[in-house]
Amino acid sequence: MALKLALPRESIEIEKRVALDPATVARLTEQHNIDVVIQSHCGDGAGFYDDDYENAQVAKTFAECVENAIVVVKVKPPTVEEAQHLPVGSVLLSQITPYLHLENIEVLRRRQITTFAMDHMPRITRAQPMDVLSSQATVAGYKAALLAAELSPRLFPMLTTAAGTIRPSRVIVIGAGVAGLQAIATARRLGARVEAYDIRSTAREQIESLGATMIDTGVNAEGSAGRARALNQEEKQTQHDVLADRMSQAHAVICAAAIPGRRAPRIITEDMIEGMMPDTVIVDMAAETGGNCELTRPGESYMHGDTLIVGPLNLPSSGAVHASEMFSRNLYNMLKLMLDERGQLHLDWGDEILSTCLLTHNGNIHHQATADLMKIECAAPITEQRERTEEQPDQASGWIEDGSDAEHDDTPAQTLNEPMVEQEDTSMSETGDSDFDDDEERDDLMVLDGIGPALQNRLYAFNIRTYKKLASLDEIEIETLERQLDDNEGLSVSDWVRQAQELEKPL
Image (cartoon, rainbow, N blue to C red; front, side, top):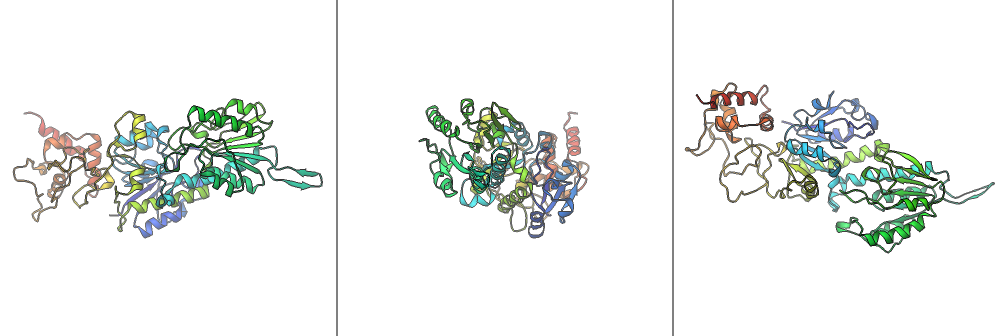
């Protein structure tokens, strides 16, 4: 049975990107034998129309698109309403920015969605082909420099004309990550004189290699894995004094400083703005996460005195065609890590990329910072994976074994929501009966309408062996079991539960 992958339409009005382009969908269907279902008009904003997705089925609504999907891919996280339509135990790949979407994540957790936050990609060489932050920041940096050039009342390049020589504009870029470096490169191509600042001393070589000048504040705040860390008060004041002096001579400032998983650092203060030259333009790329400028209004452009402050939202979407193509390649490379040679889902929890990106799984939160914000316990890393068999729930449905107490407990797990402990032999005997101990309690479930010998054996394998157990299933557990048995059309686990509850009533 081919794996079903759903590609819904992005519901945010300003989002024009699509998670997978037609070329990538063709590779998934042809090379990996995956059934892809797209939501109608999902790629219109990026110039990819339904007819371009030749090998995909087309669904009209979000709910129809994701129905019975094993994997769902999106650019932005699903809304709360969308998350409630995701199949229980399915796998979601998307950018999340957890601290901005805690309510969404709670729904994903309750529905036992296995969520991989693509914006949590580890900073290792092997993960670079999957790094959506870098690919999308490339587009954002390019567009930010063009926006600054468009809004500035000055020309960026030096021009020598019959009317005299025009001096090049002076541009400052704050933050030399991927977005900042692209902004530097683009501003330089337009002919501006560019200075750049980053708290990581290692950024100097990259800044200077692009023809810009590094602003040295004497502050170095490079954190672990090459990422920027937050500054203390003394470092902030030193940074402030040096940058205020440099910005007083700039014609345009592009803000691109970010701390992954946290609010953007406040770098440009009101007094710094008031010290700028008239008609200076500030383009704050960090507006979505609070802004590097303390006066930024997300999604707005306004004058503060003589300074124009711009807080653009979703800059990558303004380059939707190439942004979608790059995002699509990132997702494809991630999906290849998760698929076996038959095109079936196979999650290797020993892979650093998968374990680092894992946000929710089996009703738990696996990201410490998110768990702290939600005030719940962060689950321990998944250290063991179970060999899948035909009769056992697979990893796509939220039944991944986490190995907890596996060495000390020889009994099967007691609820659908708990991870199953691997037994020495879970195969079916030649007679069709499960190989359980003779004295182990189990009922004849075939007295229930709709259950035959094959289904009874499968229920036994899923640890549903008594009427009492079946009668105790809640709504989420019912939906989980229905997904496990979805190769039999017309099954109604809820009806079995109702019948079991009738049998359990005292006479």
